[in-house]
Length: 238
Ligand code: SF4
Image (cartoon, rainbow, N blue to C red; front, side, top):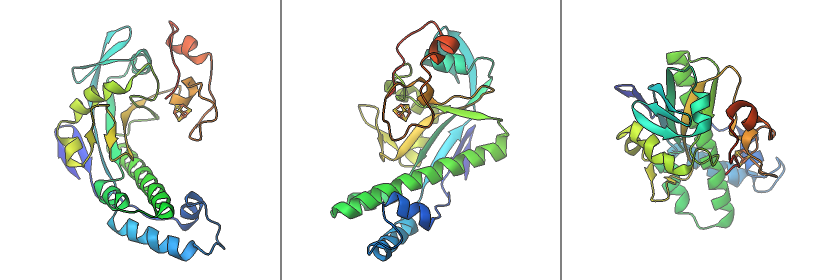
């Protein structure tokens, strides 16, 4: 763990494979002829995977009706501004499956192995997010947290990644995450965002009308934007 000012980089995060979860993500049943090979493959990936992440403590200052300052950097989002009402700090974060497993996976050619590698990278990213959140909770006791991510809702568009990454300084490069000209991250299995304390809860999916999304975590609430974030505006999901 490396700490620089209020930025904490955590690069020794555990990646422990759970066999049941693994087979489920590989779409294999326990009696499949592919199980032994799949488990060998997964162990090879786990041995080289180095999921990692960073977070920082940022000072929050309201700016306008739909803008807010984090450490003096301007962010434009009505939802973000309202979600940070009354908060004096928030926790920008970045987590990744890591370059090690990403580079290994991109050298594969077999379609089934590519599918398995993608699932393993997803699991490594989930391990990074979970461990990073636990690290933050242990250090700052931040209370009930919710997350927002640039690009998840039109209200906080993906180009705000540039401002978010400016908060990380050289931390993003230190954990091997880069942004391209379209503000997409590499490795692809990376996630950026902001954790903040909430008494009422918040999940992006509540404001996202997209139907049949395989990653939906909570039902769409068509009246939430008007109720909590009015005046009404565009609020579709990514
Ligand atoms: S429903 Fe799907 S697309 Fe919409 S915010 Fe949730 S995860 Fe993203």
